[in-house]
Structures are given as C-alpha cells and as structure tokens.
Image 1: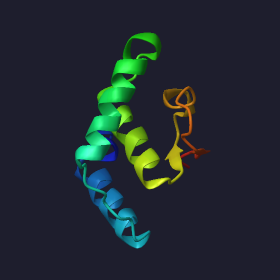
Image 2 (image 1 turned 135 degrees about the vertical axis):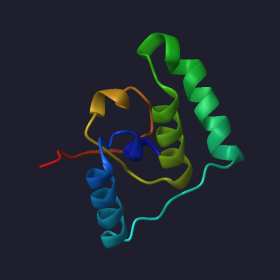
Image 3 (image 1 turned 30 degrees about the vertical axis):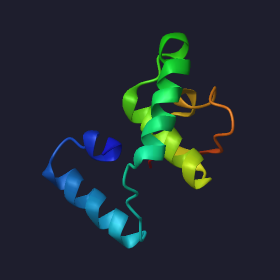
Length: 91
C-alpha cells in the first residue's frame, strides 16, 4: 500500500506492478499480531518521533516476520529497536 501511494501516474503503477512480479515479491497481509504491534509502535513513537501509520505497519510487519526492512527513508525507522534496516536508493 505504501509503495502504491507514491506512484504519480498509470505508467509508474504499471512499472511497479511489473517490477514486483519480476522480483517475486510476496504481499503480506496485515493480521491481528501486526496490527497490535503497529498500535504499540504508534503509542511509543507517534508523539516523540512523528511515526506515521503506514510506517508503523511496515515496521511491525518486519518485526513480526523477522525480516529486514528495506527503505529509502532510514530516518523513518532508525529509532525503533530490533528493526533491521537495509537502505536503498531508486536510480
């Protein structure tokens, strides 16, 4: 959802869909555990760090599945303990 939110037109959306398919990307559905973790992260970091809902869901999903969080915005997550962050830049 967060990635789709950033597309600016149909061409970018179609490219994104193609890239996700090419990379064999798995879409992970939000479940109760992820939701609860996201709520806890929001309670902990919304006021102190400006954590937004989408970022809380992404971080809680990475934590739940013990997977690295790949982002172009490290500052959105660097303060959350136990989140493994991998940086990338869009070329």
